Length: 373
Image 1: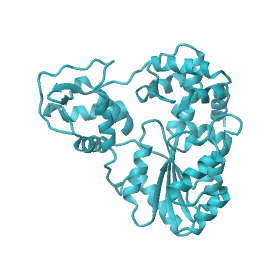
Image 2: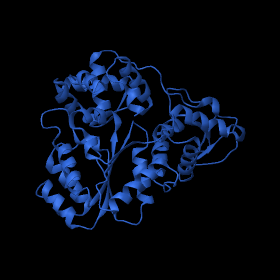
Image 3: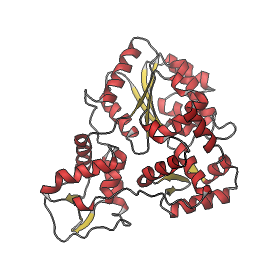
């Protein structure tokens, strides 16, 4: 409980050949390939293989399916940090589970009220607009049994008065329909610890499981599979292939999302529309967190807990003006710590480890303990 107390107290205020081109020039750490390279690689990641039978998450899902088919309450919560592969996991579950109806829904932005939550769920489920959470629960109970995958559930709260209503409604819906519907959800682990303290989330789930890091073989297969579905070519020295992928895996610490960022940032233009990859030019994640003041610290703490925030949302939870919040986020973006996807701001994935280490050093929360849980 002391872990949660510390967290709450501090946060309250505020594609593919193996030959080498010698005319490649390494990309400086401050530069990166064209944005379209990243977007194309990211789009290719939708080509996913089913989970292998020896995969830890497969075992969790399979066990939950067995219990649920026996009429038992078996909701699952998958936890992971930024870039840990939570969304990828849910998409792989989609192509793995084929014997029961399955629906996937991702909360792409903050849900701020009951009507917004219920309307999104009803639309994804093909149900009529519900009059309330009990109405939606009744519709689900009257429908055929199904598996519902809900991604990024941490976007259902905002630390302000009435900001937890969508979250409470979802938990109520899961509790009411959990024997008829198998709910499989994903959460930002840093949001989970705060919400566990306030709402004891684990009481609402039969299984809470932290997403496992990918093995070197799994990460290499993922990157090569994604690359094979793109329209650009990446070349590297054959003798360096093993070292290249091992280095990316080591830097990413098994996190697929971060591995893709590191892969793209490590590419050098090689002419003729090709890109080169060399073992001595693998992008290294920043180790320092260039925070200038306590305002930026509070903003990073709020972002790591909420996942994404607008300037208005940051202002409301830290009790400052929207103009002031926008200025703080402009500074953290200029420092590279955050990225702006108007109107949202997110932590820069490349700085996740540095931000976590910084906040940990401030004794804001024991992130090492969270990641090991």
